[in-house]
Amino acid sequence: ATVCAVESDKKRHADIVKSIPKDIKCFCMDVRRAVPKFAKNGESFDVIFADPPYELGWGYEFIKLVASNENVLADGGVIIFEHSCREKVGALDAERWETESRVYGGTELTFYRRKRADR
Image 1 (cartoon, helix red, strand yellow):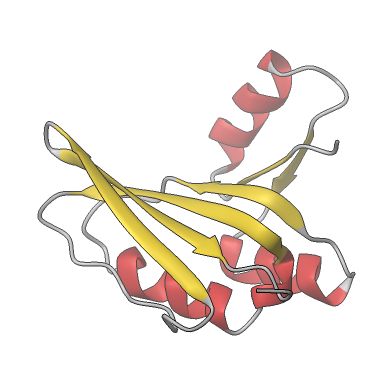
Image 2: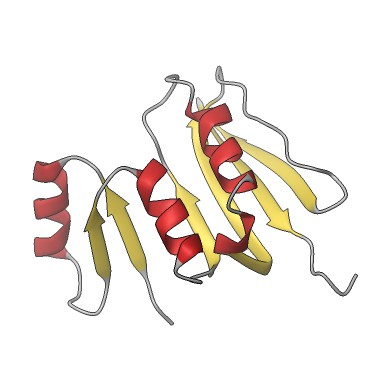
């Protein structure tokens, strides 16, 4: 399976590239460019883990980005979105997505599972 990472900060990207196995791809770009690029290229993932900076509006922006490029996530795939407990996150169409949240101290993980097309 292919593993990809996206990091927009050049220094962090360089540090990540130094510390990960060579078969993991790490792109130095903004996620707002990466997700549409993956979708346009027909790439889809079983798991997407997103850990954007807390409390900067990503709880809505990232979910909106995924909703407009939902084929970037495979049927039955899951997005794990890490955010502050104080931060609200967007909702996806309940007909096509299952949502669950878990709290760990001041951190919350919100899971968005894309329902399989055959259900």
